[in-house]
Length: 224
Ligand code: SF4
Image (cartoon, rainbow, N blue to C red):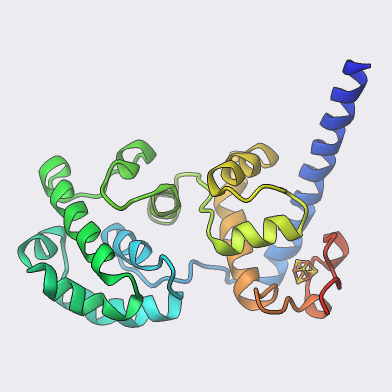
């Protein structure tokens, strides 16, 4: 009996994984230009921009970073600047005191431990002040092409709508999604789902009528 139950659960996971592969193919067709929403020129800029993106829109972060990266071009620029100047420069992204403190501490660590370079492993990145798995995976996948799933609000929301996960904890979601896909799909999944969340499956009102994956989505047309 126990063996039967476990085989049914495996089948269900396999079916989910197969459905997810079909979803990725359709999303790839729908968004051939899918890309990360933050503008950046290098790993340092994406690291800082992602730290600023907590509780803030990509559009606002891009606006702020356009000016910010004219003044601060390396970790040593942030380390040399008074905290108040950093706070002022990032004020409109919200939680500016905490973010400024973290950015300064992070840049100090980058200088001390990594000669100002951005490390290329998850363990090293998450040990930087103010850097969590989301930021670390975002930098690894988008700058170094290292597989990782960046679990942002779009990924949490849409993974649940698609019935891929039922949990809410971002780290548990990351590991559950990793189980459903080969490593080679992780980065692509992120870009496609985040783009889908920005353009079609919007938080306020998913546009199911124009959704390329509505036939594969258990939540399709369930919104008033
Ligand atoms: S069908 Fe609707 S809820 Fe499902 S992914 Fe598409 S837009 Fe989102």
